[in-house]
Length: 83
Image (tube, rainbow, N blue to C red; front, side, top):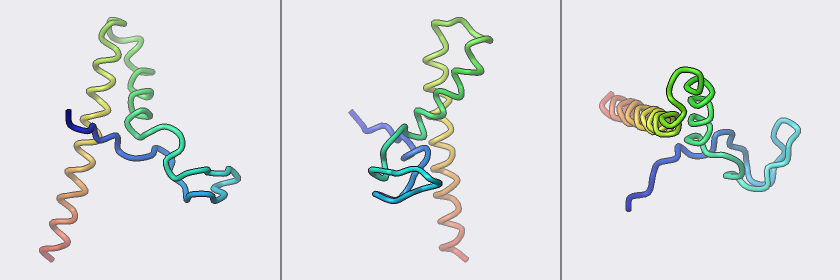
């Protein structure tokens, strides 16, 4: 099974450093960007679609955003390399 791209940490910070007044025990503590997007999508979807469909749509939404961001980053790196 392929590893799902979780987009990295939603709110990254340096390992063992203070970040905006909060201690970060590791650079990947807390939720992933994928989990954050899922939560945001669920807040909107819960009032618009059947409850049984909310989770599937939210996961799909998050995965699509992460894939789009990765493509944009990749396209930008290619454009820079060609310049």
